[in-house]
Image (cartoon, rainbow over all chains, first blue to last red; front, side, top):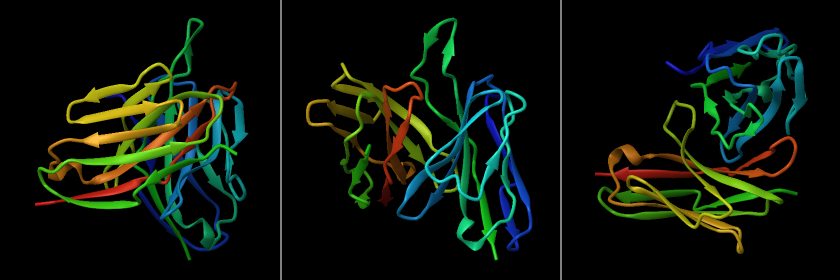
Length: 118
Length: 113
């Protein structure tokens, strides 16, 4: 089954304790991205990657890191979490191109990671 | 600055009734507009895409419209069902090298029996 898998689904941690949220997709998509969703603010992009070893900041990158060593994986790293990073996080992927064609393909989202930082 | 505004923020309707959700955008240059449905506790799922040349597109009981001149889109839900209760998110793609996406904050729809 084609899917984006995030782990864990729920995470409670304390301020300053480094954590990683994993994201994996099995659709061979070039593009992967992380979002946070907060009430009234909608989805805001944290980081995105157009392909392996290519990452770029989104709208709210402060306090986060990412890496794209393999095409299928795109982990989100919080080196020193703070309470303002308490949020619902989504990873997503989509196909960008194939044999010279550009796609208007949809984002495929994981089921989210609810993070609480105390 | 590219922006996407959705209205209303929330909506309650009775099962079987119709409703229309609105999306206004100022994204330029425009590439396409997608509507996503997000069930509680799940990631958003694409419902439909509207490109510049399309005015109307249907997906079952969902009908999306696009007016590229006024930069407005609507999502009409016909004969609502309890399973339509969800958030509906409008996402506009800009025609840039990075395919930048701008997200609306969503409309929360609740269908009551």
